[in-house]
Amino acid sequence: MSGLFGIISNKNCISSLYYGTDYHSHLGTEYGGIAFIDENGMPVKKIHDINNSQFKSKFYEGSDIINSNLGIGVISDKDPQPLCFKSKFGPFAICCAGLVTNKDELAKSLINKGIPFSELDRGEINTTELIANLINQGNSIIDGIEKMYDKIKGSISLLMLTKEGIYCSRDRNGVTPLIIGDKEDEIAVASETCSFNNMGFKIKKFIEPGEIVFISQKGIEEVKNANNSKKICAFLWIYTGFPASSYEGINVEKVRENCGQFLARRDNVKIDIVSGVPDSGTGHAIGYAMESGKPFRRVLIKYTPGYGRSYTPLSQEVRDHVALMKLIANDEIIRDNRIILCEDSIVRGTQLKNFTITKLKDAGAKEIHIRPACPPLMFPCIYNLSTRSIKELAARKAIRALEGMDTEDISEYLIPKSRKYKEMIDWISEDLGATSLRYQLLDDMVKAIGLPKEKLCLYCWTGEDFQKT
Image (cartoon, rainbow, N blue to C red; front, side, top):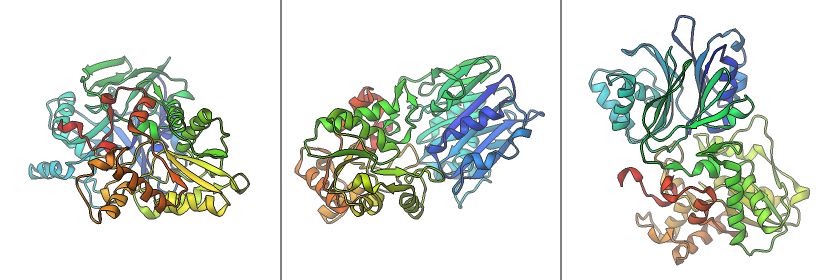
């Protein structure tokens, strides 16, 4: 998932744009970019590869000579962005968050109409360029955005910068969030509310699914009404989001504490200490400790400078390197203890097995009980860039081993009380080298979040695609 930030100011906005975008760095590791309107009313973009460096280090130099009162920024999970265009609507810049699963089909259709694509990255069509070209097929910007949503499969939220202001459009099902904040002389829009706190913004509005809002010097204007549908990604609270952020008014850290409490209520294992895999597992572990009465201790400590999330890089080699280097085992805390280790989820299981559990065992842990805060992940996400293959998922590896082949009917493995579910969990636990493994129940996770089940996207656990219902 990419992170978006936009700013309208009565003064030079570059400092706010710079810091607001940087507060989305936990959402991507590939590219960081900003675009602003220059003195001639034209959008100017600056994009940097942030694979091996932080956003701050790439954009600090030269930022003091830019003067603009409106701009957008993005931390991108895959494609270079924002991108700038001259169009029949005038010049604009655009950045996007989400995934288009029929991207190649749509691009081919446009190419056949004579519309070229120039922003190829690693031989692939840039999703942001595709979205811009689709919008350009409309009779107006609003009409173009609506027609784009009619054509795409997946989920796209976007910011579109013009010299008059910023169009803020949340995807029709609200899978990804967009929130508006304001203060005396500035209006901001962001994927993450944590970008508001230290800059003095107060939450003004959670943009609704399908809603388009235009922010300018004149204020906030709702130019397209919201849909009734809402299916926000539940994984935002479990893993993706920053602990200080809120979506739909629900705080991420509080949800993680709730998850840990539900895990503890259903547990009866005898342990000495509770810990979490930093950073996203920490809140879940705190909740478990609160409910169980056992002490929270930090058995693994993240060396923060220079290491981002090990889940987000595109290659397994990079993921493994980050997993190896960023977490340092605290031997004195680990030795001879029976440990509950809370994790946000088990995706592929390779890092947990090869690095985390191995480090704990080498440091003398007596027992290691793994407690993920969500159910087994069964399906690759079709609305955001995440796992791209069923074969990657730890639960599917277990099913393949148990069945002796890949099987489409996994319905019994989705039922926690079934024999096949238990066999799957036992296989994963043994493969990881854990003393025990117990996953969160889906209904408990939903209760921890606090939204009705029908308001959440749970596709990666259930396989239920709401766009087909």
